[in-house]
Length: 334
Image (cartoon, rainbow, N blue to C red):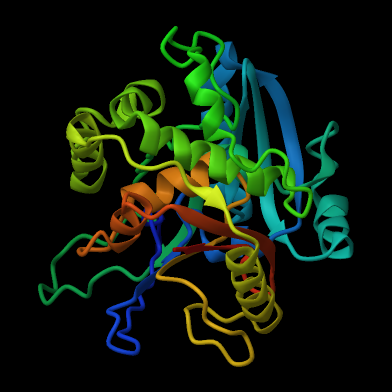
């Protein structure tokens, strides 16, 4: 057999839609926006191999490739400002990480067990074995067992907070209205930030694109490039205000889905109280939740994008644990 490194697809996705009561209520579900393998999303612990600075990025990338080839473990490069971290493996329990760690620490003296940090992953390397194609020509030279191919794609890390060099336009007091849920004590801070970022998009689509999505402007990915173009032309939309009934609707479904590991919109015990719904799995970063729904990778109808940019006026947001993907976000609109 020969070895081949592959980059796992940038997006996994799942779409659900339905018509209800003649009202034409559409709902959609998006699965994982930063392209991590399913094992990564279930992972709770990894082994940290090294910690260095961005000036040693190439050396760290080389180490990641070599480690992946030698130990057949997925490796993750994590960027935090000027720091580069290299983590390996996906472990659901610390005891499993400990078993692997005991095997590795002879060669990696500074290695330690850490909690998984999927939101900060900027690159990852996956090992996969491939059977070589059988040749029909008897005189064909044997396949070189050391042959390998490296294909890397970098995922940009986005921050949950506005960048330090925010445009003066964002500093206009009128944008304080984007933080419409700041006084809602029943919401978590991350849930409040979901309102904040989505409202920034709706209040000034063009400025949001220029501030947060400039790297998508010339993207060869049509989902990314069309989002940037659309936001450049889109007129402002109403600010989404928090609604307690919509929150209870979203929370019930998020808990119900999370406990069973379910993906989608069919409810067993939860009452439907919304005109549009988006469900997101595997992401905890509020800004990434919004950006992934707006990009809507792999969804030809762009259903999530349409719902987020629909002239609704109220929203309920709930982020809850998920049995399969660790976390799920439900957003109910009216």
